[in-house]
Image 1 (cartoon, helix red, strand yellow):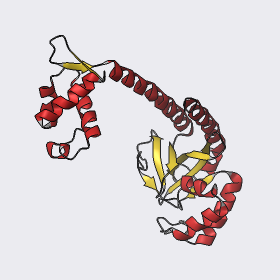
Image 2: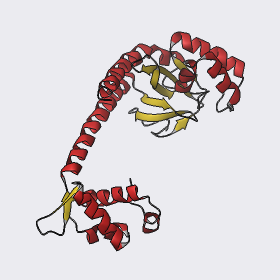
Image 3: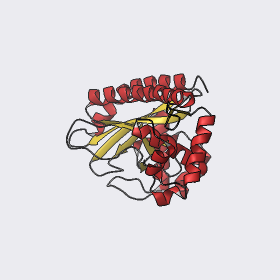
Image 4: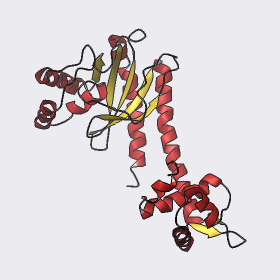
Length: 263
């Protein structure tokens, strides 16, 4: 996270102030006194000293040889080591995406369902200079994205109809489905094929297909998709990549289940 401004610091909850102290020390990369840490944070003097002392008492920070400067303690070192392990998990996931993207030649992404739509969790861009920008963190609608339609298709029929009839089916591109009954019929086909489709429904001139990444119970946990501009990849071309997507989705599922073994 970015270091908050002094005015923002005053509004930070106590727990976030503690994290800000740790971040300031790690950003510096050298031992710092509480005063030097506070030069970056502008907290009340008594507050910064209280936070630092609590972190020392809990083993997250230790005092350097001069007794004044602070550096990471055992608890923080163990914590950052675990973050590094987590980072390797994410690197493995991106490596699968990158290999798939380079094989297909177009952008590949992982999305997860959220309240308002599908959120881009990971993404590897095509090497082509012309690309469609849908960065990590962006939410795309359920009704007109390959991933969103795939997710909707996995819901119970009653829940599916309730959501489709309550959401605004905004027309975002030439082929966006705006009629609830037509969309429900399309979801039936997607449910049978287990392939989400977007034939210029989200963005004009873009097509996409998506396959599920399933959890241990066989439910959709995320989706794996490829998308690209129609002048490089037709809708039929996109569908030809489904076997490669399924193979990569199986790898990602294995990675997901391995990551869940300690839960």
